[in-house]
Length: 152
Image 1: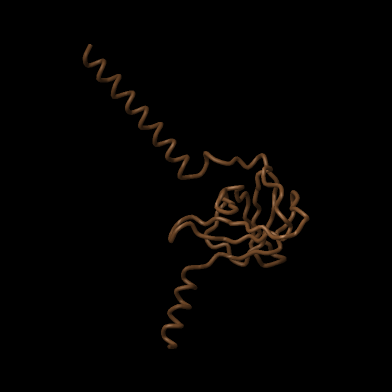
Image 2: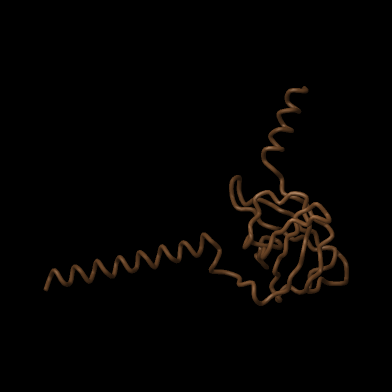
């Protein structure tokens, strides 16, 4: 009887541990939050997207309002075309909103931050953002710093 009780207790702890690992995996991969099926699409073109990936967060003032849903190369503009799904709760973004690619921490994931403009007209489903700022490539930044240090 005691052996059976120990086995049940161990089984419960293993099940709780696996459930905890599953929740941690959801949290780390950002799969547990914002679902992209209840929003509208907005496009932006960037010269360099760095390590931006599909499902990367789209934020405004640090609050997640959407996700990156597609990344493609646009051969007509020679730029990366990023498609974002913005939550319908944020359907008030002005047409002159700026999109910038930032990195969370020194080696963290990249995300898109939106900075609203001052226009009265708002973005609609399928619109493109005109103002973008590409990702800062760490290697280029270090290279420029080294050139500046050697030229002094």
